[in-house]
Length: 229
Image 1 (cartoon, helix red, strand yellow):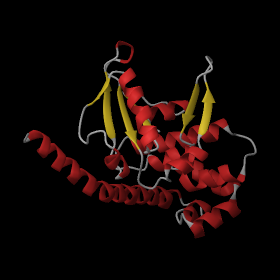
Image 2 (spheres, rainbow, N blue to C red; image 1 turned 90 degrees about the vertical axis):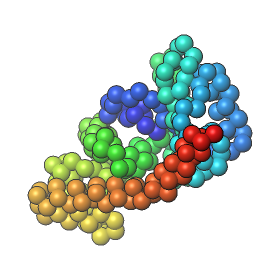
Image 3 (spheres, rainbow, N blue to C red; image 1 turned 45 degrees about the vertical axis):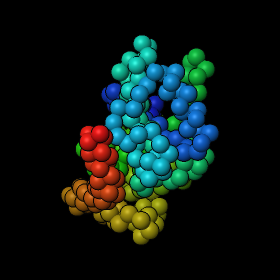
Image 4 (cartoon, helix red, strand yellow; image 1 turned 60 degrees about the horizontal axis):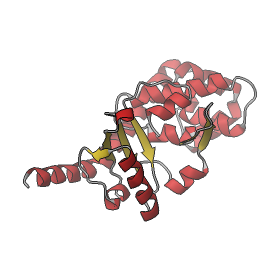
C-alpha cells in the first residue's frame, strides 16, 4: 500500500520500507507475528504491536534483522483516513504475478490514490504520477469506471483539460456531484484550474492533520511513558 505498490503501478518511487494494509483479527495478527519472527523483525517505535492500536488507526513499525533483509523497515496499518475498510480493499485488490510465480496483492489504484492523500509533501507528486502512468498505460478506449477515476483524481492540469474535452458529459456529472473544479477544466481555464488544484490539496492536508492530531498526542503519551520507566 506504499512506495512498493507505486513501483508496481509504474510510478517509480525510491522506498526504504514496505507498507502493508492488514486485517486486524487474532488469526491475521498471529500470522503476521510468525512472519515478523521469520524476518527477525523487532518493533522500533511506539506504539507497541497490539490490536487496539491498529484498530485506532496507528501504524506499527518493524525493523528486520534477518541477514537477507537487514535494516528493511516494515510498516503495517489496519485503518487509514478516507480509505475503505480492509474487507472492501481486499475485494478490490490488484493481483500481479512475478516471473517466478510469486503473487503480489496490491491495494487497487483508486484506493492507493486515496491512501496517498496525506499531509506529507512526497505523496502529492506521487498521486500525480500514478494517474499519469495509468493513463499512459491505457491510451485507447477505456471503461467508464477508469474515466471517472481519472476525472476524479487527476492532478495534472493539462491532462484534466484533455479529459474534460474528451469526456464532457462525464466531466459535467462529476463537477456537479463531487469535484467542482472540473467546471474550470470544461471552461479551459488553466490558471483557475491550477489554483483550485492547490486549494483541493491544502484542504486534504488539513483533514489529514486533524485526523492525526489525537493519534500523535497518544503517541507522545506513550513515548513519555516508555521514557519514564
